[in-house]
Length: 289
Image (cartoon, rainbow, N blue to C red):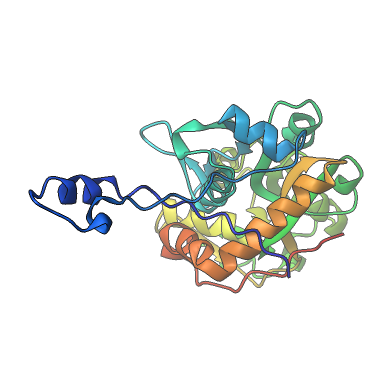
């Protein structure tokens, strides 16, 4: 396992000033300040160097998914994906207030990366072979699985088999939508998962289907109205999307992820967000393809 040590230590300026104010001090150590570690340096021309020099990064994420990526009341997104983005930005020396968050729905994640509209996408983004033809992925950093959300009083739908021939809402361009079609359900597609809730309330669809962690967030946000049923019936490895041929940047992000597993920052990111509803699961091994 390769690790990139990217620790930032602040100057102990306050201590030095207090000591120098003491009259008659003759100990040279009293006047010494802690020497800070140098800022991280990267290969000239690398994406890491360009971002570090710019002092800002643009990250695509979801704005409508409780626990992972949800726009907060102060117009700043919150969630586990947001915290993962902050960890990566921080490793480049970029503070939180210099991150530009851009809403990325399922259908526009690849175009955003290909067109250079974002530097990264951290947005409940399942790694699969089709997507790897046009973008690259670091990670995975979390393993989710497709499940089913129904109204709280629905006891008829228990597994994916009960969706066959029935209208089910999901999102355009998502892997869950493709799986629904494969199962023989009748997908009703929209742009965001929150837009699936009203069709579910009205009976236009019998269920919403996507990753279990997304559904858990929606159920938690609308307590008593919906429930998640059945066991996950797919594996959805969440990755961090970036430009297709930027192997150096992908390797770097994988290093940062692995470091976060070891130093506790990944655990804290989870505990502060999705961990308020979901149990912690050890992250999967990154895939250095």
